[in-house]
Amino acid sequence: MNETAEPGAPSARAGPGRMLAQVRAERKLSIADVAQRLKYGVRQIEALEAEEFDKLPGATFVRGMVRGYAKLLDTDPQPLLDELDQRYVPGEIDLDLRDKGIPFVHSGRRGTRAYLALSLLALVVVAAVLYEWRAGTLPWLRFASNTPSPQKESKAPPAAQPAAPRAEMQVPTAPGAPSSAVAEIPAAPAQQPSGGGGGEGRIRLEFERESWVEIRDADGKTLMSQLNPAGSRRLVIGRPPLSLVIGSGAAVRLTYNDKPVDLKPYIQIEVARLTLN
Image 1 (cartoon, helix red, strand yellow):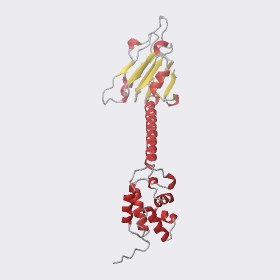
Image 2 (cartoon, one colour; image 1 turned 135 degrees about the vertical axis):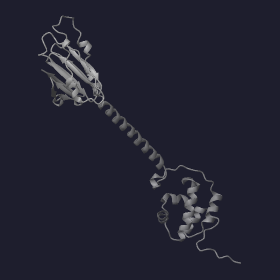
Image 3 (tube, one colour; image 1 turned 60 degrees about the vertical axis):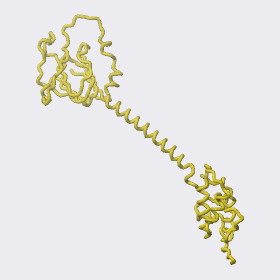
Image 4 (cartoon, rainbow, N blue to C red; image 1 turned 180 degrees about the vertical axis):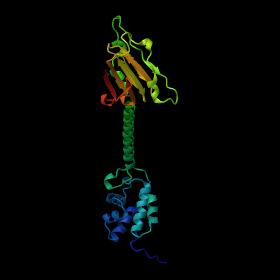
């Protein structure tokens, strides 16, 4: 029984690549036509037809090209795949095909590098924001670092003074007590200077946040120099003019001789500096 050969069937003696090239020529297709339809590079089709399998990225890739090429030419791919298995011992090759438009070669490496670069940039931004936030919420640290130590400034030969300055008085704050309780604290008459109480200045301070405060009287004596916690109240009495330096001035309420004093005009970089007469 005579077998009729399929029109355009490739010769069994040729390799799979040459067999495909022969059938392509019979179908009157160019390599560019095949590359465009199969979405491969022209150089890849040329390497397959020349059976230069070492220029292609691996056995699985080559088998897929042969199968798709055979289906495009409307011929049975199985004989070609069998011939490929006999002639080609696959070896995985890392081939740079970026100039051929192959997206999967090295794209993972570029993506990984870009991800690492973005992650590093995000960490730097977060660290900078945290640093600025921490520095902005601790303004008295900057003030204290730039202010000379009061102990060093107050060193002077002991001399008789007409009257000892009044020490600061801490106002205890009971839970639920109204804010007007500060104004009801009387001055201690035993600590009044010899000149009488008419020339004294009374300073009341209420702190919504922690604040460093330094107060000096007319003689340059330090009446107060300390960090005051949030929620605390202080009463200081001394001979005017009284010089004040108040950290976090926006969070401090000041009353002088029972009259409120607006600190906003005196604040520069969160520190208020003023003199009360």
